[in-house]
Image (cartoon, rainbow, N blue to C red):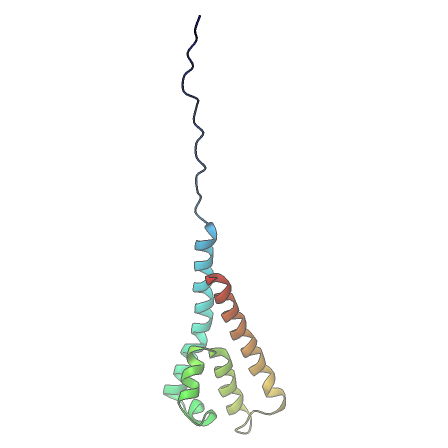
Length: 115
């Protein structure tokens, strides 16, 4: 008696699942950009409606670069400049340093998300 064997059952190939982190990282980027957008809008308002930016910086290039790269540092530097005696002295560097840390953490988060 001969017995024939049928085809062996095939295993289903593993389904590749979409990474849910991609949508989460998009949310993080939008939130972080929104957080820095506040500083950018404030800098532009200072630039248009006041002379704080013009007095704090000697040229328009430095605040323009600051607007794009380190908005919180630029904003807090200009703010501390106008609060004090047209210079940043002593404790006034503390908010500027905090702004710099906020900007660096934003840039580090962006780098981590896109690597």
